[in-house]
Structures are given as C-alpha cells and as structure tokens.
Amino acid sequence: MIKNNLSNTSTFKNPLIQAKNLSHSFDYPLFEDINLTLHEREVISILGVSGSGKSTLLHILSSLLKPKKGEVYYGSKSLYNLPQKYQTKVRREYLGIIFQSHYLFKGFSVKENLEISSLISKREIDSEILKKLGIEKTLLQNISDLSGGQQQRVSIARVLTKKPKIIFADEPTGNLDAQTAKEVMSEMIEYIKSINGTMLIVTHDENIASMSDTIYRLKDQTLFHEPS
Ligand SMILES: Nc1ncnc2c1ncn2[C@@H]1O[C@H](COP(=O)(O)OP(=O)(O)O)[C@@H](O)[C@H]1O
Ligand SMILES: [Mg+2]
Image (cartoon, rainbow, N blue to C red):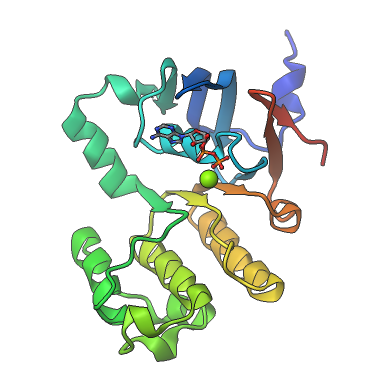
C-alpha cells in the first residue's frame, strides 16, 4: 500500500472545500497558485498584514468573487462553473458570511435584523445564541444605538441564526476587547464543530488565530502553513 504522508499528518479527513491553484490580482498581483482545503470540523485562520489580500481570498472561497485563475471545489463541483442560480443557492443554503464591515440595517432594531435572516433561512431566532453572545437584552434597541462591539456580535448572531454548514468570517472580532473576542470565537468554534461544519477566519490577531486548528499566513503572494 502506498502511504500518503501528507494526509496522514492531518487529523481532518473529509474535505468540504478545496481551492486549487488560485491566483488573483487587482492593480497588482495579490497571490499566485494558492492551494487550500477546508475539512469537516476544521477551523482555519488566515493571518496577514493589511492589504495582503485576505479579504479577497475569503471572497473567492465564499462564492462572491471569481478568481483570475484556479478553481474552488465544493465537494466535486467547481463552484464558479455552476450556473449563477446554483451559486446563489449554495450561498443561501450552506454559507454564513461575516463581513469585515457588518452590513446591518441601521434604523432597524436588533430583532428586525435577526428576523430577516430567520425569514430567509426559515429558522427560528435561537435565544441561546443571543445569550451566549451577550446580546439578548438588546433585541428592541436600534442598531445605531449599539456599540461597535455589540453590532459585531449582532452580525455574528445573524449569521448563526441561519445555521450554516460553512462559516467565512472576515475579522469577526476586530471591534471586540480581548476577553469578549475569545468568548465569541469559542461560541463560533463550538457551533461549527457541533454540526460537523467548517470555518475559515481571516484575522490579523495572533491570539484569535491560535484558537483554530490550522493557521496559514498570507505573505509574499503565497499561503504559508504555520507550525502549530
Ligand atoms: N474590488 C477591488 N478593486 C480594486 N482593488 C481592490 C479591490 N478589492 C481589494 N483591492 C485591493 O487589493 C488589495 C488587497 O485587499 P484585501 O483583500 O482587502 O486585503 P486585506 O483583507 O488583507 O487587507 C488592496 O490593495 C486593495 O486596495
Ligand atoms: Mg480585509
């Protein structure tokens, strides 16, 4: 029997998403020939300085941006070769995307913001999630009356309400103090493990990254695996 040492070193077996030979550029090349696999139950962080292309890579992996080169496989299907309406279906049914700027509906209450997600996904708002994120008492408050940190937690609650199989989170704890950031990360990790999903986090915070199973660094147009 031929042994594959590479796969034997990983605790994670079942790939959910495989990115192959991704390259992208805007005014200048951002990254070249990147390969990355997200396995069931695996939490991955991507570290990198501002402008290194982390958000762009997250958008490519999460169905929002077609790469200049390379493929993103969801199971055996090449995502960007699927008809647009199936790409939208994948995004709606399986993905939870937490954006760097959180796109909440200002002028509406926390409850109304969560109800939109609940309506689209046909899932009830889960009061346990709200309690764990420490925002259960803010339901009737207007989004614009909340602190940046509370808004960030509402945007995380909104995504978790959908009960996605796969979470992409772009600097999800950027507005939180260290202790709250850690607690929010723990909640997200516990959720994704409990449903055998996978989560990819983009962050510049080494402490947050250290809570994940696998850490990469985007640097010099390449994705480096960090020793754990
Ligand atoms: N839609 C776009 N059009 C043109 N340039 C872009 C676009 N999105 C990002 N960029 C540029 O690509 C570079 C990397 O951006 P980004 O992926 O947001 O990096 P990071 O998230 O690591 O800070 C930046 O120089 C940014 O200005
Ligand atoms: Mg970014």
